[in-house]
Amino acid sequence: MNRLVIIIIALLFLSSCKGFEQECGVGKNNRYAENFGFEKTENGYDITLRRNCKEVKVLHLSRTGGKSAIKIPIRSAVCFSTTHTAFISQLGETASIKGISGTEYVCDPNVVKMIEEGKIVEIGYDKQLDMERIISLKPDVVFAFGVDNESLSGLQKLEKIGIQVIIVYDYIEPKPLGRTEWIKFFGCFYDKLDEAQHYFDSVENKYNEIKELPVETSPKVLVSLPWKGTWWVPGGNSFFANFVKDAGGKYIFDNESTESLPYSIEQVFGAASDADVWLNTNEKTKRSQILEVDSRLEKFSPYNNARIYNNNRISSKYGGSDFWESGIVHPDIILLDLHKIFTGDDKNLHYYMKLD
Image (cartoon, rainbow, N blue to C red; front, top):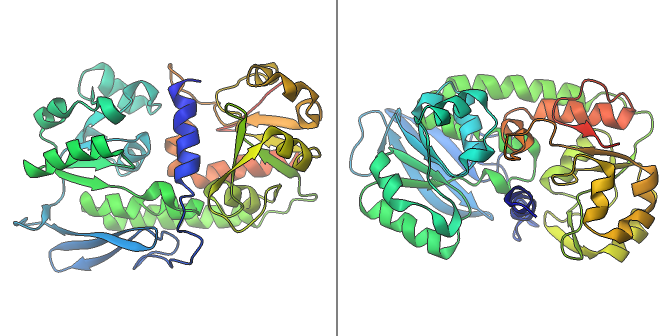
């Protein structure tokens, strides 16, 4: 299984880390996002970062800078995730991106062009992070996410020499609009909070309008594929399960968990035998390719009878899916795709494609 699939599985898992069974409440001045809050100050913004309902860090952003503050607007950034680049691009600040982890998986044509021109460089990932290259770029901020202990040690090295490293917790938001609301977080760094709020308000309105569209019969929905005999199923209150329910679908594994839960193939066979729609089949582009994962799936009723769609219609040359990139700032488009699928009017899909 290629790196893209591993990343997707990791995102599904990380989006539902333990600790979110309790109500965190939204962050200050937010409507959905739980893992950060912000407020304007006389000369900038104060941002509070939280993870699993616990305060992690308070950031002071100032237009005049200072010892304990990050000077804004920032002019250069390194991004550990293509979702970070999507937020930054939406704010019109693509030119500030100097390094990305996984450049081959980027879909944004403007960012791809900058990579091809050498204006954005690869900085590695996980244990292969190129710390010397990051240092040479002299970024104002490194936007990171869920790193292992070895990578964390390297990031601490960056902080010791004065490079600001900010771990972005958008990936553990359980609500689609909660993730999108992180554009306000990035808006503070570029001193474009007003633009970020205006954009979010527009997306929220469109999302909620689509959410109210009728679905005559709610289809039963199955998600993902097994991996080495285990089927990791998003919890019933997870990021993607909330997408399914907001679009009018009936999520088969409906529960209060925000965790991705491990099931055996046999358990999924029993629970999802009458699934009407099957979504997000990793990197597969044809129905027959599903059998490459496990031959037993040939006898799985949804393989033969359900309508199967994958979210990789827009992909990079090397398999990066734009669903996980620009989809972070366009949840309304994802929701409209799902609504079309659930109502049987699946023409002109944006992120999804039907597997025949």
